[in-house]
Image (cartoon, rainbow, N blue to C red):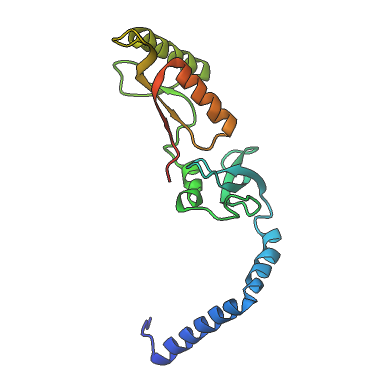
Length: 199
């Protein structure tokens, strides 16, 4: 196959590009938007859509998640496509590279879907229930707090600190959830409170 580009072909391609950008500059760019709007109702016609928010950072962009019936398991739905939500005032349909690649996160074979526990002395994780996981976390937190809680400093001033525990919060929670998380963490005496809000 001949991949040589002649001067005539180059000038023809450049002229088409200049003409396209000129039309857009003169306000004819709405033609593309109208065409996209006419195509959208027919795109992904066999899927169901649901609105969600991106879990990656504190911007909390809106997402449209499309799912179809799974070919592997009858009666189950699986995500087939993700795009930005044009009705969301935060991102107006756009997504950053991490949000645009969220479907890879969902379909990743290494994605953890359930609580996993590694027993002392072993090198493998096993699936456990949420009740077991929550009780185990609560037990370890209480033991650590009882052993390391500082009520007063050297001058006898009450400080109520728990210096050996930290709390990492998610960034796509509501204001109310964030407020409650902060109050619980501070109420327990934690000093290291961090948030996952990183872009």
